Length: 117
Image 1: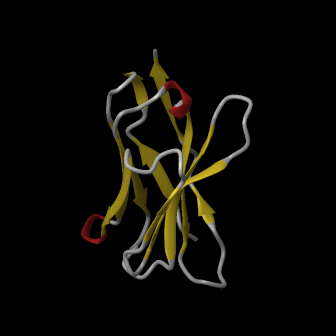
Image 2: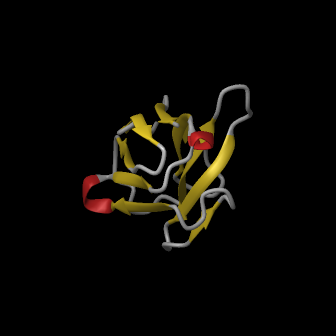
């Protein structure tokens, strides 16, 4: 069982920055894939960014060039640096991890990001 806890959300103005953190209950060094999803008001949950154990990243088109996903294995923590924030980035952001290819996917409870115009 893996527990994931997000933090770093809050209220920010358009054009501002935030860094989200996702702390895992154990070592993330060999996790197959980790990532961030978000769910805006009245919208379905959507992929934001992923990061594989090999360091490959993938981003939604809407955040490319503005968001960066990274992780610190020593701290068992994944990050999402969000720059040039827009009102449409307002959402609950969820951390997810899939330790093995065929294993279960785990989710955090989310952290709210609100971007004010």
